[in-house]
Length: 274
Image (cartoon, rainbow, N blue to C red; front, side, top):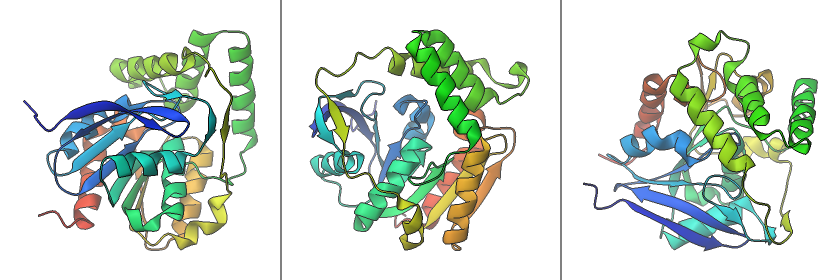
């Protein structure tokens, strides 16, 4: 029985945020990918809570979090939640869209970030390839036609399967990804209009990151994300970049043991925990 595990909903500016915390020690914030929700980190949430105070959340519009209307900022939402939880500094483990938010949050509030472990990071200001543009057009078309299950399957094939033999992907990975997609795609539209504020192209500010950085990609990840990781690596020569074989965009789901080992070692190297 884990008496220090807490779940709740925090009323942030522009969104109601579902979060859960567990463990004691230095803080570790988990930010999920845009094709997922906080469930993608379930394994890491429990494992890291043995050494850290872990905070996991659903970004607004995903999982159990909702937009409430008006202007919002992902950085502000995270900052408000951390303040609510009395967290002054934290390590961050983030994937894809969540990693873009983590980078933006660091550049807004560097004093609050102890280290950044980024899985398949997206990056504000990155110019999408024709592949990504065509993907977005097809996804929009499917959504416009109301084909939600087909959209979820399309995203699974685009980001996870990646032209591999379907037998190579564990059935529970496919089931989770599809389920996380369906939950996001079937969420009702916010009652009131929402507008993101404070959007910046931070691609030119990457060199300003001074915290330790680990970058991980799956070998079969979409090429744009290999390109982004390569760019971050060049801008931050002291960062560490690792490619995990036999995995695509969400390598933690496909190679959980290796992923945890790599990230755990990184945080341990940059932690004051005993």
